[in-house]
Image (cartoon, rainbow, N blue to C red):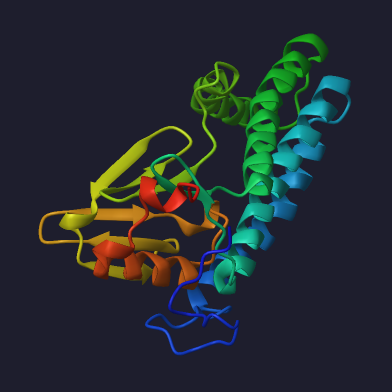
Length: 249
């Protein structure tokens, strides 16, 4: 179901909305991409040189490089989607849901698996083939990576690593993240804004409550999503509920 916000008229023509489109290029964004494009080639070269002479070592280099490239790919997607006009909602028994991007979820899972496989393959190369060039520092890095990511991968295989989504009912807004769930009542919120630092997110707030939605993981652009949520904050009668999804008699 295509949902429309204050940013678009019923006929599809753009109208003046409360939220301005985000700039594609900003200094913090350029700096982040610049650092990434400097660090990535150096890291890939270091992994390749430090694992030469061992098949498991080469495998670890490929896995580590792939994880880094996937991570940068996620940054590129988030950058491109800053001006996305997409806003797709799906009806549920209690309201509507805005699902997460499957492409982002797939890339994130692949990055986790590659990053977890890197220290395993690297350890095999160190202990079986006796890799020496750069092995001390890289092995220390691999152990840190393993400690950080293996519990997350374990959650993935146990089915507890969930697809992210935003669930909207008549009384509450709930963000279901990969690992945690946050919920707030509409009646406690009176303001919607887009924040760009350190990442782009939609912030809903009230006198005693604050609720944030990381747009980059959802199938929605920041401006259409903000307009839609702002409409729901201001108009209680327009909030989704069971009645809106019932079939006519």
